[in-house]
Length: 390
Ligand code: GLA
Image (cartoon, rainbow, N blue to C red; front, side):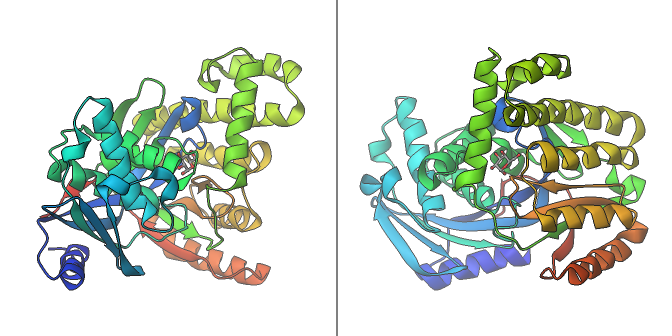
């Protein structure tokens, strides 16, 4: 049994005085490439990481839901009859939001959500929060998988991803896309997950990192980000405005060949936002094609170009993220970019294993020279998606 699993079981017993029916877990993610493309019906290529949230759960006979988290004091409890998406807040909004979103999904299928029974849930996690590694998706997906089984809901993984997204959008109030939950539910060891957010087709693509002697470093800048406030939503609005002005349903309807027309129709800022999304979609496809033909050591230029596009066109990077990326590149990384929604959080660097320690040390020194707080740097590997652990 892994340490997290044991911790999850023990924590459940300490909170609820009995053993759980089972333990489910779901990973955080890093996005290798394809940023702010998901809500534009575009392509993204994330992977599930080896940091997970575990939820130990036990069915109840009544309609109460009780949730505890080892990261926060106290137990929050609410009846399923009182679940109001507008009335949930704080950390408990994530697990309770999933309970609400799943009952909604079942109701929409014409099933009687009034007969669902309550549940006790205890969460423990080793996904760093606020680092842009989708700690919230890890909570949502572990809880969604547990409830799916305890409630006999029978939803498939793509439906569970939509349940997690609905909880995030409606309850937490962050207008995010489907990428994080898809990565957390569909991840596979040593694979990236190519998402087509228009057709919702997904494909696990071998990364070949260990065969090529390369790996991914996460550089958590420890600068905070929250997608429930301004920047993320305003970028999303610009994309929608751009699509409307150009007469397409979403920016997926445009290719690089449409950019000259876009430049003549749009204001300069909206054009830059659109150009990021259009070129980023192409970079995702190019990255996957290059991985297949030449292996991971050849994809660096796409990662680097993605960062430039986020920095200059989408304007979601920060001084800390730019420094993480530029120093990783100067220190010999194959490629580097910020990952996730931006405005803080983490960057990734694809590095040869034999220089990983040197690159990490060099980035720490560069942060010290710039007078920034020390970043938290650690390797991640592509790992299994959400599962029942015991
Ligand atoms: C956040 C959101 C995702 C996605 C990324 C940007 O992680 O949750 O849906 O939009 O930002 O690529």
